[in-house]
Length: 354
Image 1 (cartoon, rainbow, N blue to C red):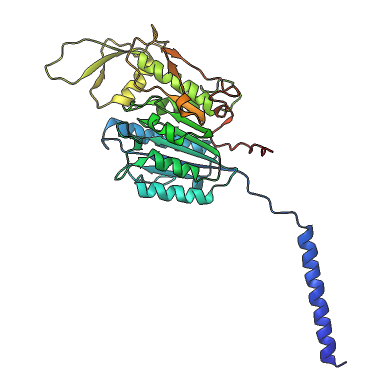
Image 2 (image 1 turned 90 degrees about the horizontal axis):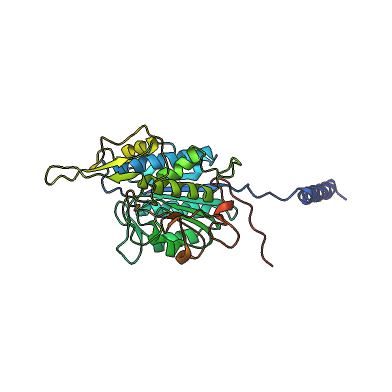
């Protein structure tokens, strides 16, 4: 055999040995692990009605605080998308404008990135419509209707979806977005509730003060946050009493006597610059107490609700027949899924049914 032939045989043997070694290494290597589950968040602020008004100011505050809550829960900054009435590129994370095009783009990107074990959280504030066949969140330009929102949510791979809808007219979305196992918290619980809502303030305060932690285990579930916020929101309304004063003819100013230090603080925060005013005889230093007489104060214009069984007509409304209804989250009842749901903490997937 010629020297060239011997070299060819040697090269072939070396190649075979290398391929065999690689095959052995690949066989011995452990399979690639799936990435750990994560949370992805979309914060969506609609139109305020008056970009310089009190409600716009409150909405900006709620958006900022909800983002801070998600950051405190250690949701990666890149997983938080914020869209609002006014863009703020310098914010962290940056805030884009909440046009329908941008909402669709955000959902399309999240749909590509989210996995079946991930959690998706949607937080909404703004004005909704209650006079049309399909509920809408008012946006700059074309609005986002409930049909499209339901379609976008259904397009996500994960079933761990939490919707916290603090917009007015939130109840109009329930019939479209409710699904078994999907947690939907609404600032309103009955169709037709289209007045400005303040439930978001109490929902956030429950986390920020840790007062919503009813079990005392250091973790606030969505059910705990809902129960605390819904009760505090109703009581806040009922600590405000109308007073009859002689006002100039044609005056639109409305005076209320407000009971409780915290209630007064929030009243001023919400209504500074509006026609609602504190009456001089109110006692801002008085400690907050339970409202007297089963809701004889100011009428509650938002009846918060929770739904997680895919039964929107049976959504649990917290304030019912002038009494607080605290959900226990027992199996088979509304609130059972919410009782096991913590924002920022994806739960293990349920075992497949045989």
